[in-house]
Length: 169
Image (cartoon, rainbow, N blue to C red; front, side, top):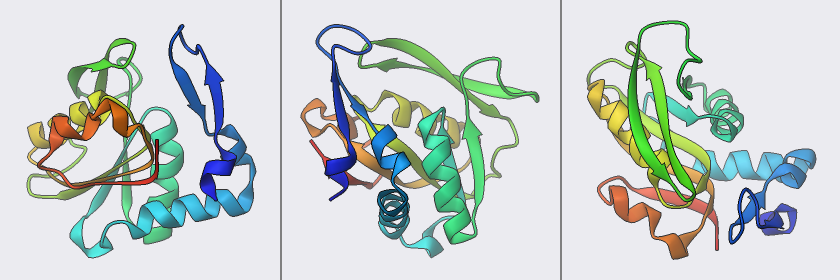
């Protein structure tokens, strides 16, 4: 089971947070392959054109799923990390606020986008990325994540976008 490869780290990054550490999963080739396949198979590959993955662990799963399916990948980064003109979106995290950016030409109007990340908690990161896709004229067709902390109700922030998770806590 994939859950067997997730390690709980209490009080990280601050007291009261139980961090879901995916490092053991990444270190196990069979578990990593199962996770990538599960994320990829959650959504019909004909329903989207590009994959957006958020810094930083969304890069791991997003690029692996993109390679697996023969799709393009778009990095969504923290401010100041991208070399070309960007658009940005500020959002709330479980433990603060942050901003995400992507290039102004990351997708074309009408392109269909799958969002891939390791974790859905409060929905801030995915919600901000959905907003970025829409600002660019793209169509967010679904979100696919490894882990969902369902007790935080994050998917309610973007109820109009189907969301799939392999592991739910």
